[in-house]
Image: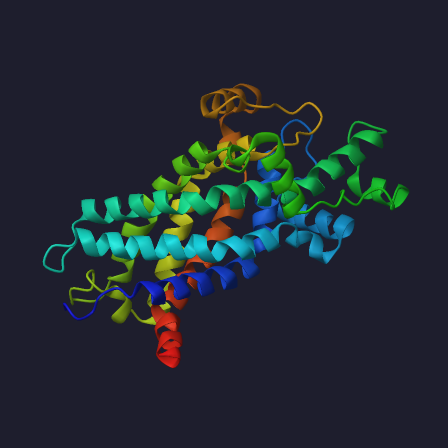
Length: 324
């Protein structure tokens, strides 16, 4: 089907819309994931629901959306680059309309590599904003500890005016990083981000493409967005996203730890990826590498389900049609 080329502007619009919708829906779970992954010795939260409950009590409903503005601003280019790059690479690697498994994996690798340009600073800023509440809660627990198992809820009633985390902004963090560390400051943890996103895309995109083709005898690998029903694309995106998310959770834990600038009392700082992995293993055990795995799956599954649903509905094509 030579006349059915990938329309890059349409894919950019689709990816952007999908990212905005998806992030708005799942951001509170992503915040819980970041806070759980950053917990080391002091356990402020016992799990995802406990984290969200305490966040609402301490910071209000919108406390669950700390850092969302950064994500909503940068997720459009991030998702657009990821989805569009994968489409372009798949086209370039296809032979006579067919793409072998190695080509699917290589296309995913290329997509994951391209997105890191935007993903690293986005994650860097988001993590600082998301983790501010955990650090404040940890300080509250430490200061009000009166027994072997201090209660965060009890400390709230005792000091209601001091529980709110200090307010900061992505702009302030960005300016401070640029002033003190230059552009490299915004790309702290880029290696770990690349190490997470490339394997994720190498798992996600081939798995999605094959799940999206289940039950259809046509050669739908060359242009699946024209043939896949909405529901099938949605389910395939959710399934592939959750599998890939859980598979790379250990790498996400390392990335999150490396990109967190402010540490709580008694928490480790790390010199690099290997040092981080060794310290986590020594101090917290192998289970620490799966911190936030459930949250991550609950974030990525609907995020990519929505993304693929919007992507394959062809909203971008409709928008361009109206404009042109």
